[in-house]
Amino acid sequence: MPSTLSSRDSRSVPEMHQRSLRHDYHGRGIYLVTLCTEGRRPLLGSLVGSSLADAAIEPTALGREVLHCWEQIPAIQRELAAKKSSQTGQPCVRDISLLERQLMPDHFHGILFVRKEMDIALGDVIRGFMVGCTKAFNGLSPQVPQLASPQICGAPNQGIAGCSKAPGEGTVGCGAYSRREGSPLLPLWEKGYHDRLLTHEGQLQNMIDYVRDNPRRLMLRRQHRDLFIVQRNVCYLQWRFSAIGRVQLLDAPLVAVHVRRYFNEEQRRNYMNSCILAARRGAVLVSPFISEHEKRVRDEAFREGLFCIQLCAEPFSDYHKPPGELIEPCSNGHLLLLTLATGTPQERRITRDECSSLNAVAESMARQSLDNNITS
Image (cartoon, rainbow, N blue to C red; front, side, top):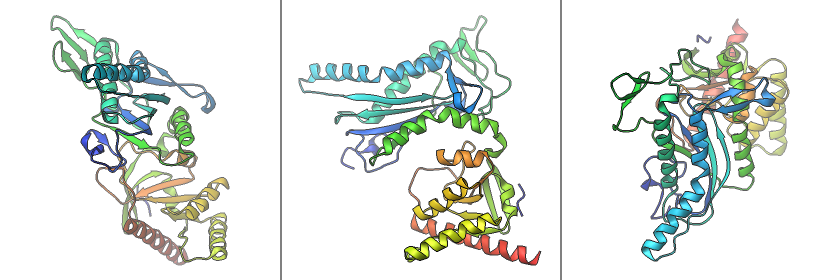
């Protein structure tokens, strides 16, 4: 029971949380980049709106500076390329288009299109943007409120203190963050950033929709904050999980969902239907939901208002949140995410061994759940 590349590849830019070690980040491509504020302090804006339909972010003065720095990227890179061309006598083109952006209280999403191969890597472009924002942050720091602790799950913190200049000391003070004039800049961003590379047709619109939907998803998480807090040491039988979502789903009978590769079309259809029928009778479906057919079972369950437990390969950080398509099922209590993994999350592909292991755990959970319900 629960208790509560090429020769010039991305490795030359160590600050990147790389999605692809083999991709040449000098080359043409569309990228979704995400930067988080240092300590996840909500310095960039505030969530406003009376309903999910009109959820939006109202930027702070610093947030407006961040947006301005982002909008200046194409012009700045064109100017730097022209300067280099004049110095070297060799053509240098940096053609970048900005496709979408979304400011959030403690992070920033931006989609950009590198139209032609550049003499510098994407990391150099983003690093310049980060430096410009950091300079703006330090210039505004007497006016920017700081938090003593980071916000959790998008929850507004208490005890926000305004910044002030310490009398007679020539310092800029921001609670625990203060800087003597002339000393190194206070950090605005966490070290590094996340990048996601567009790899197939149709992905761009999904990226844009994801970025635009951030405020609505934040409002959902705030309205159902208890379902998005990472719970540690959730015990079920012989396992100890980290969990996000409705832990009480572990009290119900469980049915594993594992669509085998050797199923023919009729077997696959009958098996998938049997899973949905079991869920309609009160069972909770448990699976890593890795294959497309398993995801179809999960999504159909959600459409019918049924319940699922999804096993994950990656560890959960304190700030972990479900992927965009799972935010709503989690917020309405129809989903529980579980992981046995510990350590620092890393962006990588799940391995075949991990898939097999997660399916084995799901099937063992379902089998023991059935045994417990028979004997109780």
